[in-house]
Image (cartoon, rainbow, N blue to C red; front, side, top):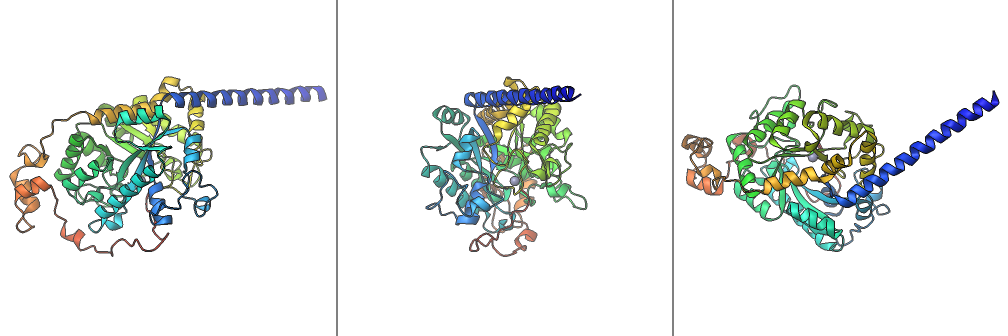
Length: 438
Ligand SMILES: [Zn+2]
């Protein structure tokens, strides 16, 4: 009897050792793949934490390793430094120039400029490790060069101040995606909270001006990011856009019914239009609770693959903008473990390559293609804009004729919004800014 038990224990031990050996092999395989193709993450909120903690002063910021540096070491919001990015084999990061909704119609454009300035200074301060990138080719070059491709994504359509001119200048400064909304409606687009029970839609999707924002982004070669927008806005934007769109940090609504996630019918339209969902790791979007695991994240990736196809899924963890992380994906050093898990679930190396970066590169290249959009789009009296549309949008701003409106492309601020005036965004106090919905 004792011998039988002994054999059983030995058997279990051997099985465990074999499994561990396989897991080790898979992790090695994941690392080998990531040496070959760039791992691209769609969203990281480190710049906002630098604003909160350091008021954007970079002089004493030790980005090489923040694990022992106050206040980063103890902050639940901090998951990113250069050492851990290298461990996680991250090749390209979209840094978020996030602009809080409290600044809408006040100083949102200024905040966007300050956050872009911060990202550019951060990159310039670390020329050995980072390089500012604004193209798909640039990502591939930086990967070969062994430097972190650093890209800029502006989070919150209110950052353009309802002005096509501001949008164009953000592009000139390096922004390569704009998230059409954050947690507030803009005068031209509804955000995801409009989909929540008891909420009344503001527009019911994208207005004509919102569609012109999308067309102008197509013309510029800037990705349209639909994380945070309402479902009608997603559908309107995918219909209006000439180029594929992205979700820089969202997950699957079928597995967690957060309004921040993408429902299956939108995933199907995304597949038809060639776009990509970059999966967020935030437990509230993964398990709809405070706790989740690496395996739960893998399940979201598998679901999006099942509905939209393997060409339409990527990674957009949202580190540094979340204060909870899944077990097994605690910081930016853990991405290879996720790819190893997917290998264990039967993913081929070819498919892992697509998920890691090739899908985003395909979308980015498609966005960079030239789209024959009239410049500026609203100047053309076409199916999108009629004279009566222009007059409707301009007649309550005295002295502004439709031609001015066309060349500058400013949507007048609605009276209600101008009256909000909840106090300008307070940048003097440290650490007191609450981040609403990551
Ligand atoms: Zn976000």
